[in-house]
Length: 156
Image (cartoon, rainbow, N blue to C red):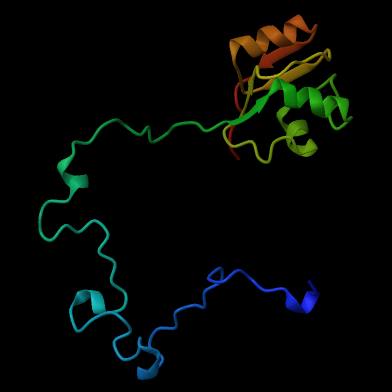
């Protein structure tokens, strides 16, 4: 076998269907859309339409509730904090929300940062964040550190 003998498997690559390029293409004139009617026109999307019958999304009852003022927290795990401390990207003595953003562990604060207990924390860390799970607080105290849950800073 030589480089110039390399070929794709038969049927592996298929050329793109070019619609509306003359009668010889077999897809000219109406471009496979048929004649007249709403679906032959451009800019038509009949997504939930069921031919005049009440669409399924309207027949089914509404459920649940979306809280209009809900808080969205940036979530981090203790294991990641430990990893960043080991890589010297975080100082274990004073970890705040701002230092977490600066280190690149969290992209943005959102309504605050919440710490969860996934992973192990071995460093003696002092952490101040907006929220934390009970197990995360216990894990930090077990490692000899301190996790303070502070009220979120007022939005500027």
